[in-house]
Image (tube, rainbow, N blue to C red; front, side, top):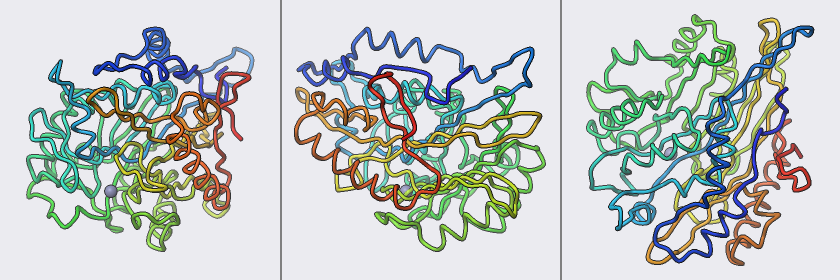
Length: 410
Ligand SMILES: [Zn+2]
């Protein structure tokens, strides 16, 4: 039976130190490590555990990451002058075992994609399509695209992003080429391993850039959201997930609009609310609503998954894992937890590299980090734990347990 742990993985001890010590301009992750990652990635994501004598219980785990952003220095660092390609695999390398351990992993793509330059950072984001390829290779199964940067490159940006994701067969939702496409494709239904989930995605706005005529970017609109939730319910999903781009930037607690909207969506059918945008973590809640008679999960902000923001609290984020259990057609939230992630930056040769690291593992392996990185990561961990310990409701942290070589709930 699948354990209530991540089913994987020794992370990157060898690989990270090898990369750290390398002076090569091309980062090649350690072969042995990659073989381990391949084994994990290629394993079918088996969610079913059956027994002939016991009632059938199916399990399905979901993972959500925060904002995927690319500022100018990251774009510059991703370019390999030897291959003349933009390379992002190393950024996600140390998260791959975790991201690929869930039955379904969803990330927020907070930029537009293109096959050709110019690639740009703040304030109008556009990255090479290889970023999406690397996200997919690292175990991300779906991207949400409705956020304040959806319209950064106007209509062409929306169209190119959607076409690139479609060409990669990378499921996505939140923005649409036409209203007709939205009518057909939305709400998105995830139907995998005997679980059916509806996925919705909205943003508070698009930085003052009007949504280009003909295209659709899902904006937060209570009337529309209620209609969409009604439509989602018609598919009879086991759970309805809403990913919302909202809140005040750099605020560690949700504002009244976030709380009110979360309650409104839960009242109208949503079960799992995942928030993005503030660039810092905000609290997470997991409880049984006795009036609505259902499990409710609310995560107000996951912070930055990858970005070049380095200020205190912005240089990391969290991924959350939600495990669902189905027995006799009843689906419950059987376990939730979060993994703190921290972004390290390293100059190797002429290039700068960005790495997302599972913080608890590196907390216990300080020898793998520079002194400066260790100090910054420890501050991020400390700030995050203080906030989440005080405000989270039934939403513990997964920490690395060295003795068993795996992650456990703290
Ligand atoms: Zn945003």
